[in-house]
Image (cartoon, rainbow, N blue to C red; front, side, top):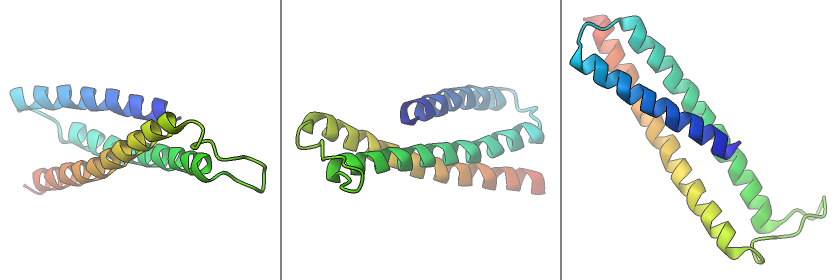
Length: 116
């Protein structure tokens, strides 16, 4: 889920960047087009946040184990894998925070354009 969610979000980011460039080059845009992107920005923030949380929960079980179901710690055996997983989770958390900020900027810009 983690890899799929971040891949789809990355693909959406590329599409959004290309669409934004086309809007900048051709300023006859529709406000509904911008509203569409604002809604989908919020949707993808939720997807990235949920994927980061789910992967973090699985990573925590790998780090600490779960005695109730008999799962042992695996990070003492697969140290390199756990370090890579921790790095990818940190970058994903940074991406989620950045997406929230970009979504807020996009919504504020849309609000200013509608208000004018």
